[in-house]
Amino acid sequence: MLSPTRLTALGASAALVIGFGWALSTGLAQTLIEKPLEELKAEVLPEKLPDKTPPPPPPELKAPPPPYVPPPDIVIQTEAPANTTAITTQSKVATAPAISSPASIGRPHSCMQDYPAISQRLGEEGTVTMKFTITPDGSVENPQVVKSSGSERLDQAALECVPGWRYKPAIQEGHPVSVSWQAQVVFKLQGAR
Image 1 (cartoon, rainbow, N blue to C red):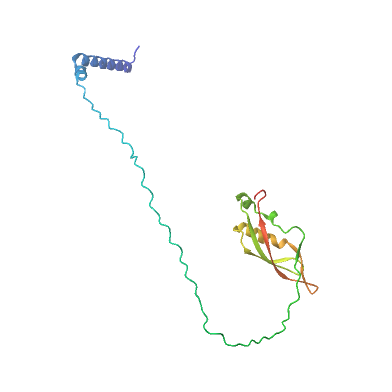
Image 2 (image 1 turned 90 degrees about the horizontal axis):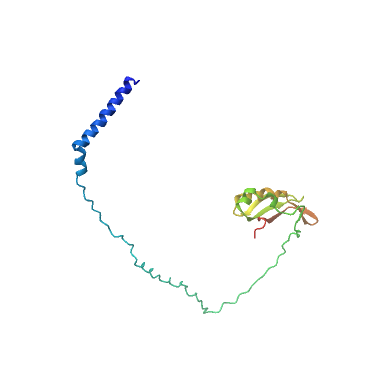
């Protein structure tokens, strides 16, 4: 048995189908079908090709003029110099006794063990020129960078490494003395040329 809601929906559907059938049979659809088709006009435009003319030649460059070199000054002496008498005096200047050079001792003076890991990863290499004092006991004091390697990390590694170096001190008149000294710290990656 059909419920009243379904029965109403069925009736509405039937009425709609009957309405479409009536519209078709009376010619409503006929006028839509018979409506003349509009003409469509299409115009084909030719493709515009790029200009194939060669580019203009480069402008002529004039050679720079040769450098100007002024002529040398020429001095011609016209009179003979007057007679001069030279008096030389000799004085004795006390010279300091000779100082022997210090010699490195202990492990080789290298800072490769202190090569910064980040500098190795970045491929940084360089040579740091260091200035320092070798004391009478052979230790290193006051290290300073005289010439940078170009990398702040390598320069700092050299500053931290050099104080660990040891030297046989310089000798003057049989006694160890302090001397200023310079050395280069080379940071070069293994296998690099």
